[in-house]
Image (cartoon, rainbow, N blue to C red):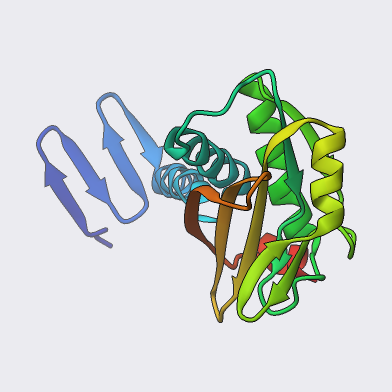
Length: 191
């Protein structure tokens, strides 16, 4: 019985073995190696929450004008669902955690504000205004700005919007929007 084969250069490829120089290597090994390479390449295809959060933070810092003072405090609040400004999730809290870490790496003094009704934002005639309690807290910490954000959940994507807001007058100093694919991890973090 003849096994079909293909000769490529100095190598003979058969149905079950690849003749590689002096020895024949089982074809299954090459298939397994190829499969491992494919899996390794696909590992980065999901949402990289840390990298996305760090990039968003870097962009907020880069775009802020006038530049922020590293020794002065920046507050950071949990990111909230755009459809319910009093609701966050594991995703919203995690984004805030990573952004706070990145600000700290850039030598900013960071104070985290865990989401509380009285602290975040209030909707007023279609505009979002920082609550009075938050302004009082910012005075207590001598904070120059706060990082706030929202996320909206679509079918396969979560859209995230981050803003650096000057606390003295609620002016948006910089903003950055990005999207995260809803992989299994992101879906679980949304609850």
